[in-house]
Length: 221
Image (cartoon, rainbow, N blue to C red; front, side, top):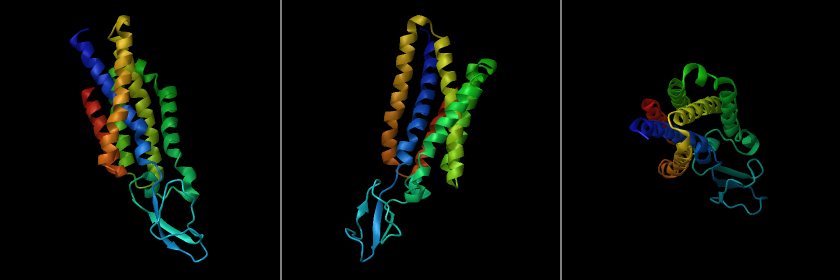
């Protein structure tokens, strides 16, 4: 291996780090928030003001028990009240992302051959930055879903382009090394984002961190 191969491998691996973060982001920002009981009717049993209801607790608002979010605005669910009668909307966060990935792979992966690996990796990394910022600054859940869809498209094409260019600049004898490096980068992205989620519990700043990661990747390409 020469210096050029190492540089390409590092840049490609950094792309997979950013994609791993985008893939796992809903785990940290999309979960249902804890709720605190703020009012109880006389006929309601086992109701205590100040009691914390976990994310899986049954919804009882409007049936003698009133509650509010314990940490309002810390998750997508609490931001747009995606719980109880709107709980069916929360899985759409991942659905939009994977639908974008499907569209990116099916309809746009041909651009990698027609326009080149590096230009596509650079362009779709920039698109990932834009979509991540759109998610962080979204004013409604629909806008957030559009951002997640675009992020799925961007990650599908950029990760494929990164993988292809990395394989093409190395010979077959180093294929296992490339695979090890890329999968290690993916695992690192998943693991390294946990401290960031603990440090930034609010979902909007945490999403902006992902945008910054994609900015770095775009500049590297």
